Image (tube, rainbow, N blue to C red; front, side, top):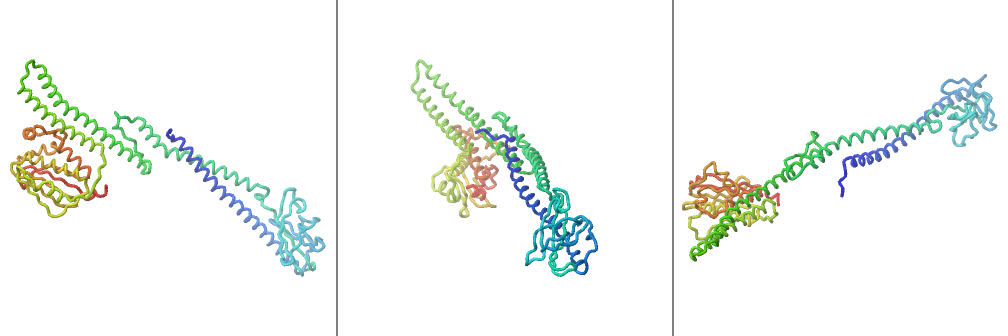
Length: 461
């Protein structure tokens, strides 16, 4: 499936946001138009009603001797006998005009509201007026009198002008918002385009490249940092793989070349000696065993490098050490010191391999005694392996954990070793978030290896 381009995302986000905004703005403007219309009409009717009440007060005691006085904003007044529809008095604007409305007042209501438009209201064609009338039963003009007052409907409410104004506002808001959203989304996605361009340039030979991290502390910056962390792990994995291939080819080339040479010499001998051939086969068997050990260690390193998941369980390291290294006949004196259960969340087979490597290393270099101390110290399970050998020089205490690194004494005491035991042990321990370090034993005076596995490894289960 083709990846969605940032430009397409920009269009989709803008369209979605504008659609939602258009709906919300439409609802708001529709409600606003209705509210404005009702409030404006209500204010116009209130003004007309106030003028009509003033006329009512006037005719309660006397009649008008001429036209009804009028001033802005109310220029139209009438006093009408609503039973005969006779206009008894009017303002100048309505002199000679029929009643503003032919609507009769309700029996139970003394006020009426109506709308009068055009020439009938003394205006121009298309003009409309809000008419308010009050019915009175006792006045200077007699009974059953209706006082009418009319005020011009505001221009904004004439026809559909208000709706057109609201529609214009809607178009302006949506258009402006669409431009702002388009620009904002484009600006927000600009770092994504840079990240995408940088990812396109990545290759196996260019894993050192990293994605640009925006200065803004937002989700995109977090994505870039996460991707860079993944690239770091990927580069480290590829580096380990290349190192593994290089180490394997280097270590396997020499013994295979030696075995090939021995075989070629033996095959080229026209008169082979049976005893020499037997010695050759014995030597080849020894070389084969060494190759088998190297291949086994290399496979273990490959599994560690690819982070093959292995089941973890709660293991008591104190009981494990006593089970594995006590009760057996050994050429050296071995003492195990524990102070109770020391739990650790590990893979049992792998931790046994680590302990076996450390003890085997101590046995190769010790003179007469090995001490193993298992304890729980400062939130970690700790295993110390002491020996009374010559020890490890300070400058070589990190070198012994390098792959295929072998000190002169190690080559002398164990010619068939692969130099992978300690590196494998450290990588297993580091997979549990722990450490494996070499140092000097104050207890026995020789080498000291300290294994620490923190309690927090339980969170990685």
